[in-house]
Image 1 (cartoon, rainbow, N blue to C red):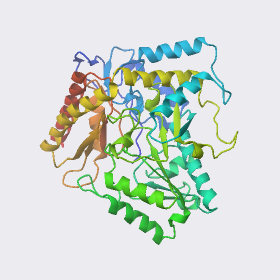
Image 2: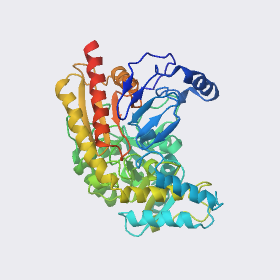
Image 3: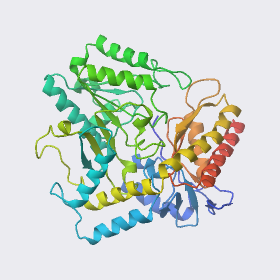
Length: 464
């Protein structure tokens, strides 16, 4: 279900003052409405689906407007600010980079790009790695899909198909969107026309073949999906690559080990490349640097973005050198890929994650939040289907009472109510809440935010 345009009618609030939260105006703040209206006049309505909060400052795990309100941020922007908003060391790296009077280099050699690439290669679980830098996650996804097709074509001209999982998300541009398992506009390109195919995910409530949150579906689920493709005439001789999220953003739970193992074995047997999209779940978000560390499987390609810099637009594709060297000079580059200022921000971010042990901190904080939120599932089992996640990648899945159908209206209403109480969340439009604060969040603040969610959900359910 698509998000609707959020209303700009101020809703009265009860004043909130805590160590971390401060709400002193109706929401949206009346003085912010003229600016938001100007934004809506200047940009398409697709940008108007989130709570109407006019960001003015974001620091650490806090977001402020200019009207005296302050929120505990559970969005990290959009699962981006892993090291926290405006981290001093990242800001300093950006300032130092701009003082070098080098703001763009394209593919010409530059030291900032080298430094970041070498750091990524040192982290890579793939042997003999190389990496390439881009700006957005979807751009890096397009690169990975192209590499898989290039590799397949070297085996056979018709080996160009891409398989992805229902419910997984990979980006907005053409191939990335086709690989995504979200509902598509009716006028969108038919996947099969361009050799994109999907099989059910092991936890896919929207799929009749996948299992629900309460079930499990591993190697058998993967084999059934592949067999169904073969029955349609799409055998492994036509498939170049398999792309999936090791920890999907829609479920925030790692794929089952046996599903991932079966996928890896099948891919290797049939010269199919395996790509892990870690744009959301990578860079420490799940309590490990790579989300794939939860699976015990090493892919052929890893795609990173978002939390790679906690700030400026940086993404990357990591893979074996022979694979990344398939395109010739000039065939795989990007105007802003490896931008020296962005590269400096990403390198500083990676160092902050390590030096401040934020990945371990996120794992500990996430465990405490899960413990608090799981009380909701016990108290409201008819309305809450699942509370799950790893690290600070947590989701609360809400259903219509007595059914397994997502309750989109209730979930989005809870998120909006939390915003009015000083906890910043995004509405998903899909019947679940997402708890993804910066990894640096104070444990007390994280539990406080979880308590607010519990209060809002309890009140909404009691009103139904």
